[in-house]
Length: 618
Image 1 (cartoon, helix red, strand yellow):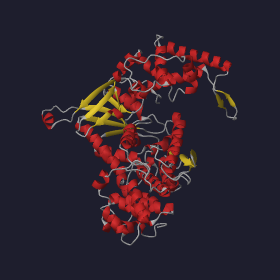
Image 2 (cartoon, rainbow, N blue to C red; image 1 turned 60 degrees about the horizontal axis):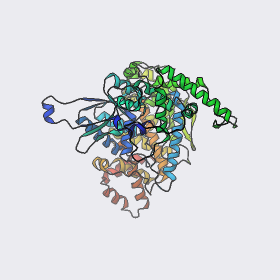
Image 3 (cartoon, rainbow, N blue to C red; image 1 turned 135 degrees about the vertical axis):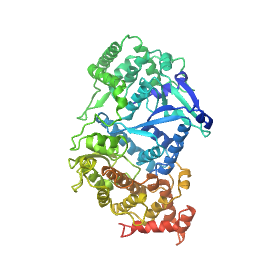
Image 4 (cartoon, one colour; image 1 turned 180 degrees about the vertical axis):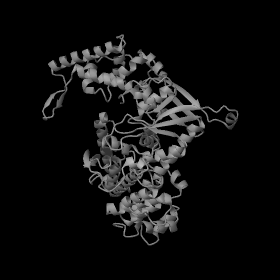
C-alpha cells in the first residue's frame, strides 16, 4: 500500500533503529560447528529494484543484464558467507483492486521515458529494463536461493512468513513498518555488504519507535491508515487532517531534523498520534476520526472551502465526502495490515486464485508456477485474462515495440486458455497506457491441461511447435543459443527496418568474453550517441525475447532457454553500432572486433548463419 512520508519520518528517528554488524563465518568456525544461520525473508521485487538502480546500471539502452546478474551474485554470496539464509518471495498476478494504480504507474513510466529520450540533460530518472526480472531470477537459481511466487503481491506473504518463522523481513515498503513483525524489519537500503565481506544491518524496532511517539504498537495500523494509503485516499482524509489544526507540534524525543525543516507530513503524523492516544479502543478512535472529518467537511462546505473537482460532465463541483465511505476505507485498510497465518503458507501447491480456463488451477500447474517454471504473466492470462506489455525505453512517436511479438503471445494465450479468449493487453498507445482486446491464435496447439497431463506431445513434438512459431534457429549454433538466434531471425523479419550494422552489433554482443562483460563499468546517464530509433527496434527485440520465453514455458520448456545476459547487452550494442555507423574503410569492423576481444571467425560465422536466407531487411 505504502504510506507517504512514513519512511522519511522513521529514518530521522535514531532510537527506532538497532544497528548490527555481521562478519563472514571463518573456516575455523565451520569446522568447530559454529556456523551461524540467519534466516531472512526477502521481498524479491524490492531487492531487484534496489540492486539494479543503486549500482547505476544503464537503463536507457535497454539493460545491462550480465553485469546486473554478476552484481546480484556478489551481493547474495556476501550475505551467504555471513550466514544469511534467504527465502525470496516474488510478486504474482495483478490485483484487480489496484488496477488503476498499476495503470497510473505505467503512465508515469511513459513520462519518464519521454524525459530519458528527449531531455537535453540527464534528469536522474530511471526505468527498470524489461528482462531484469529474468536476469535476477537466473542469478538466484544458480546460487541455490529458495524462491517462491505469491498469488498476488509478495509483501503480505513475506511479512506473514517472517512473523511465523520469527525472522527478519527484508523489503523497501513502508507497510513493513506497520506490520506486526516481532523479529523486526530491515529496509534493503539498510543492508550493506562491504568489500571486506562484513554485513551491516539497521533493523527497525517498532516498539522503540512507538514508545517515542507515545502510541501503543497495536495502534500503529490505524495511524498509518489515517495518514493515507492506497485504500484510504486523501480526498476522504482531507477533512480530518484539517480538523487537527495548523499549530506546530513538538517532535518525538528521538527525532532528528538533520538540518532540514519539519515537513507538513511530519507534523501530521505527530498530530494523528496525539489524537489516537486520547481513545481507549480502536473502534472508539475510528468513530472519533469519522465524526471529526464529517463535522469539518460540513463546516468547510458551508464556508465554501471544500476543494473543487471536475465531475464526469466536466463541470466543477465540491469534492465528495461521506462519513460512511471514510469508515469503510479505514476498516478495509486495517484488514490489509492484519497478517493472516494462512498467508505464510501461501506459496504451496494450492491457490486461492480462480480461473474459468478449461484446465483450472490443479496442483501440478500451481507447483510449476511456484517454482518459477511458469511465469506470472502466463498465470495472469488464466486468472485475469490480461497481459501487461510493460513500458520500455523506445521511440514514443511510434507504435509500441510490443506489437512485433504479439503473434507469439497469441499462441501462448491459446495454450493457457485453450482458445477461450480474448485477452486484454495493457499496452502503450501514443503517450498513454491503454487496453486492447487480443484474440488467441487459431493454430492447433495443445492446451495447458493436456500438457501437464503429459498428453500434449513429447519434448521433440513440443519443440517443433515452438520453432514453428518462432522460426528456425541459426545453423551450427550451440544448444543454449538456438532459441536466441531463432528470436533474432524473427526480429529481423518482423521489424522490417533492421540494418546490417544493428545485427553485427548484436552478434558481437553475444560473443563477448564473460569476464570482460561482467566487469565493464556501466554509465547510468544517456550516452550522447544514443539512437532513439534503434532503441525502439531493440525494444522490439526484447519483446520478442520475452514472448518467446513465455511461449516456451507454456509448452513446458521443450527447448533450453537462453541466458538474458548473453542475449542482450544494451550499452555494448548501442556503442558498437555507433562506432560501426561512423567508421570508414573495409577493416573498420575487424578492428573494432579486435578492440572488444571478439573472435572474428566466430563473429562472421554467427552473423552469416543468422542472416542466411534473406533475413528481412538485412
